[in-house]
Length: 491
Image (cartoon, rainbow, N blue to C red):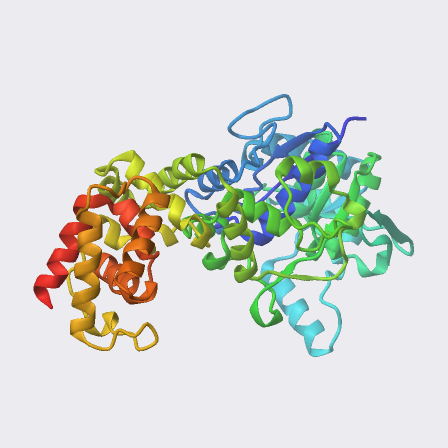
C-alpha cells in the first residue's frame, strides 16, 4: 500500500514552530517513501475559527516549501479538504454506528454535565460521563427523539478490555477501556467532534501513517476504538514529543512570537529553519549538522526520533542561518534578499534599488560573512546609502592606534586623500587599493592603523564597520574623496 500522511490543523491562528516540525516530519517520511502528503483543515469547532488563518497557513507552508500533494489549493481524489464541507459524510457514518449499537444518543443537558463534573472534582474522581443515557431502552430513546429533545451522540466504549496500539516512536501502548470516556462523537449542532471526524477522514483519505504531537497519545485509544467499531484497518501512529522554549517551558501553540511567520519576518532563511527544527528531537547519527531538504528526505527515520522533549533556541537557529547566508552564491542571496524586502520592507527596497546593481552586490559580498539574518543587512548598511550626518571626533581618536589628537587625524586623512586622488591607484581592484595604501603609509613612516582607522571612521561615521580599504572599494573614488574632504572641513 502506498504511504499517505496528512497535516490536519485547526484554523485557530498561527502555524508555529512546533507545528512546522510535525509538518516537516510528515513531509520527509512521505517523500522518502514516494507517498502522498495531504493537507486537511479541521474547522468543525466554529467557536475557535480565526478569519484568514486558512489562507495564512497555506501561504506559510508554501513559503517554507512544504506544499501538500493534495489540499484546499490543489484538490485531488480525496476532497473536500475542509471538514465543514464534509458534514453529510459524518452523518452517514454516525448513523451506521448507532445502527450497529456502537454509539448511542445522549440527552443530558449541559447543566447536568456541569454538575456531574463538579461533583466528581469535589470527590477527586476522574471527570467522565456516567453513562446515564447509555442504558436507556430503545423505547425511551425513541420517545425522547420524538419530543425533539436536543442530543449528542456518544461512543459506546466496550467494557473491561485493553486498548492497544503500537507507536512508531514509543512502542506498544496499552490503556484499559475503563479509563476511556464515552466520548461525544456528534454535537447538538450536527457538527462532529474532532475525535470522530479525524477517524472518518483518515480512513476515507487512505491515510496510512499519522505523525502528530504526543499530546494526542491520551486521545489515541478513542480513535483506536472507533477503528474497531467500524471494522476498519488502523493507520500506524507515531507521536512526536513537543518542543520546550526558554526556561524549559512548553512552547505555547498560540504565541505569535514562535510562529513561523514571525521568523520569516525576522528574515530567517527557509533552509536554516527546516535544517534546525529537523534536528530538534531527531538524531541523524552523524556529526554532520547541515542538511539540504533532499538530504533530510534521504536520511530521516521515524525510529531515530527521540522520546524526550527538545529545546528550541532562536540563537541556535541564528547559527544555522548565518551558515547558510555565508555559503550562498552572492547573486542568489541578493535575489532572496530582494524577495524578502519586497514582502516585508518595500520602502528600504525601493531606496537601495536606486543604486547600481553592482554597487549593491559589492556591499552584500562584503557583509555576507557578518549576517546572521537577512534583516541585519539593513542595520549594517546605512552609511552605504546615506552620507554620515554627524562627525564624532571621539570615534577618530584611538590611543592603541597612536591617534591621540585632531592633528593626528588630519594628517592621516590628508595622506589617504592623496593616495585615493592619485590616478595610479585602481579603486575597482581591491588588491591595487591594498598594495598602494601599504606602500604610501610605509613611505610616510606611519603605521597602517594610524591611517586606516581615521579613514574608516570618515567613510562610515560608525564605531564598527567594514575596514577602510573595503569601504574605498565599495564606495568608489569620487564618494570616498567627498567624504574624507567633508570630514577634514568639519574638524
